[in-house]
Figure 1 (cartoon, rainbow, N blue to C red):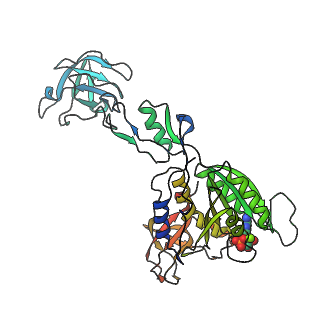
Figure 2: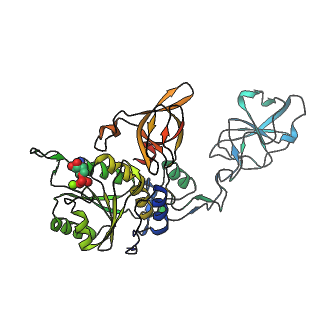
Figure 3: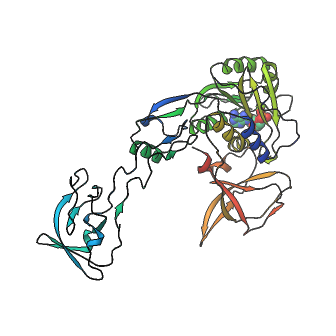
Length: 417
Ligand code: AMP
Ligand code: MG
């Protein structure tokens, strides 16, 4: 297993902007996992480890884009209808098998290889066929309805670049180029645990003063969505020794440990001491809201991300920081999600100097997409996330968003699942 340097997360500053944090991840974090070759059927969502270079043209041969008649454009009578005898037939999988004669047309179907000598196809709807001859309308351009060999991907071109997360269409393209397996990065093995004496598993009794574990289920789904193989280490109590034991176990056989809770600087926050006992820990105080410090560290060589306990803060810091970090460890190239300009359907004031993520949904108003803010924004209000479609990102310098202003919207669909 590749190792990160022990101090790759070291950071001495007080408050770290999101861009600085992302820059730091890009600089210091490298792929942690080996590559393997896997059959095409099993690699959707995985990260491609090497460029796929086309070993052939796609399409492999020039072919017809329509059902109709193929001919040499030079055989048309300029400005008038042309009548040509139809002297052959080519269908998909059934090439003509010889060059086409000059002064004649070939009946042709979609996907059939273009016969040598023919360069243009007229759609059957535009032709009249009678008694073995075809009447061709004037005005068609040379090369119409002909697909060139290699017009999709030329032999030798990079069809899929290393570092991309493979989509269904990527698999289609690889298959069209004759690949039956692809080199991918091994899945990142992630150990996941929740911390807190008050946190209980759903499905068990809930004594007074306790809460059910929301984070572990949310984070496991987020990690699975990024292609990680997640091991569930359950809920650990707020006791340094118990946490240290679990972290030591988790560090063996995992590429990454993800925790939630226990990383603020209160006296009940024991993750910090446990990690410091086993390795080293750095707090990145991100200048964001909602969000608290995110702990980044190493436990016996395994990197660790400690997310805040508040579910909303856990989700936002996961999306903003953990997601790019995990994608990078897992071998992905640049992973910045796309943002979409929309109109603000709300007014909002904030302190300058930090980036704020406002929970919102989109509404169509005439030609505009308008972001409507979710009315409640506490860091513990998880339903504010389930009832929203994404986050309006209000950058550091902005002090006030006025209704009607253009703002950047990050749909959850870009970063989740
Ligand atoms: P902490 O970061 O441990 O100080 O926790 C901050 C807040 O998040 C507290 O109200 C915790 O009870 C709550 N919390 C911590 N862990 C979880 C969890 N796994 N699921 C839901 N809420 C949690
Ligand atoms: Mg706690």
